[in-house]
Length: 107
Image 1 (spheres, rainbow, N blue to C red):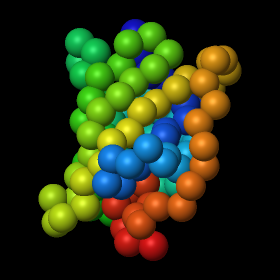
Image 2 (tube, one colour):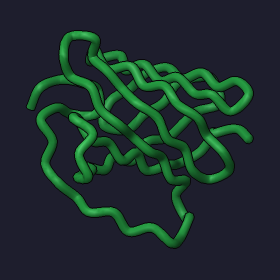
Image 3 (cartoon, helix red, strand yellow):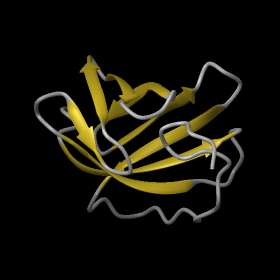
């Protein structure tokens, strides 16, 4: 399944149980928009994201309307993330403040 469309990215720097949210749209040309822009690639359920404006790189798996994985700035900040396709019901995560934005820039 392709990720093209609107999703909600839930991310936690430090892999705590507290996740922040960001709306993200995957475009058919391999780019994404949201709280930043970047490039994405997907193959056989594996997805990779790279922000244009920050050091964070995301890698993980997508299956249907959900995805999960890990991210890193490769300079000391690491975390966990998951994606939910907009319109999917059944999950209600909490909003929290993070140490970095989704693209890996310190706040």
